[in-house]
Image 1 (tube, one colour):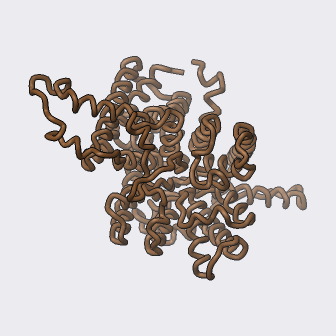
Image 2 (tube, rainbow, N blue to C red):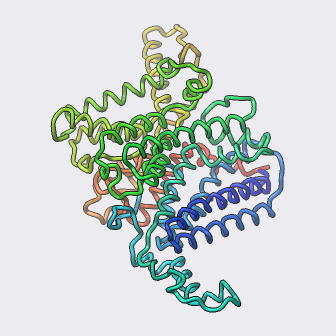
Length: 528
């Protein structure tokens, strides 16, 4: 293991991340949020400085599979740690900041925020915000401007406009919250590959470790640029449609960030419920499905003019079948109130939202639906979206291959000498691929049940935290969905700090698809 080569790449990633933090800082400046500007300025400076220091320790060199696995696994952890700095500087404690940031980068969408302002936008607790480092630094600078502008003389707070800074607003922070999900959806690693031209072999190794997609071109940098181009194109299109449907430009942009990434953060505490618009919900359904669909199919549709590519794909067909079946089950036996069309609207939106692992809600009553509906929701969480998409979960492709594998084993019991290949789109699937699919699924379920047990132990003192809450909390975090059931239906504020750390681990290992994280604990990985 060439540790110094790993450090060089990690340092570059931190420099990129720190530079991107300036964007929400600009948003904070536009909305006249001095504490936000301070928080993002400090966070950007610290992150870029740390990246440059790490690069000085590191060295350039060849990246093999070993280094690639470590770089990808540690890059997501470092992004979470440094990405949490703006939350910390604006008043959240360290655990909650890490939770919110990991939820962002992993496109989970679970939150610990509980308060909103008079316009319905999320805010940090006013006491915490007023005692935050960013707020106190702003007070200090306005009281003693000579610290910042030596020799200019004192400037009164009335001249500086500080009196207009009456209460904290957080448009910059909420933008960062959505922006982390945009970065996490298509992967900050893939953006790193697309931007830097000199990675070469290192970029190829990182690409195959970080994404399950096949390369579209001989050069993975070109492939990364194509995927990011398609991704941002969908974001732009959705933003225009939502704006035209009545959302503000700010809300449209933040919501589009978190829809294509199948992430689910909303700047409003009421989420999609606040808009109460069938048109907006229809737009979101379309783009949630787009985000949860294999981006190779989007490439074939846009670049190859293959207009039937989606319906020729067996995974996408199964995905639509599962969505339709789940909607029908909830409409019929889910305990949803209202007429048939109203039930279809509520159930259909929620099924697509959970089945794409986005996590938007158009009703808060879903937490009180029947046990049958709860079971359907948890199953959708675990299955997730399609392979090669921004969605989480086990993935529909693996479910399809397991179904085909089970059928083959049953047929071999009837015909022991028969040779029965497993095919996907007329292409034979190797035994190695089948074994890796089975191994991943088994490990996923083992970790799911183990973390559910741990969460029931850590939350044993909370009488409201029942088995459904524990199971859905782990399922929603591992599958990157967001809202759960029971106590965690709306947020994770009632979970203990230890329970939140378990949830953070579930989000991380779910986004990493387990194996890269497991490899970190294999001694052979670290040997030369």
